[in-house]
Image (cartoon, rainbow, N blue to C red; front, side, top):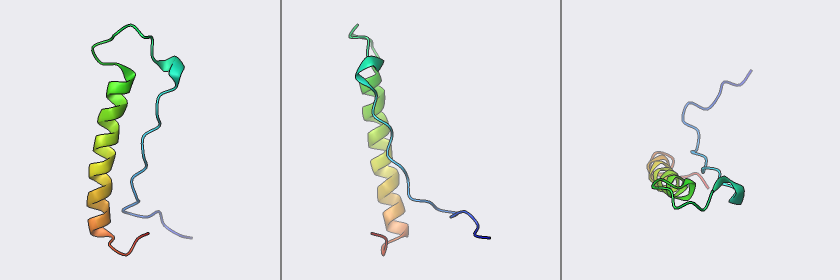
Length: 56
């Protein structure tokens, strides 16, 4: 039986659906949160790529 990868490639965040935004001008809109999650994903992916230089 194969064991799970101890260092899996990070997965990108799911973008919010248009219906997730209320268009109310919220201080922390779902699109703001998503942008923060994308930034975090990019940083985690860059670190992962450093650890796995031969990965596609």
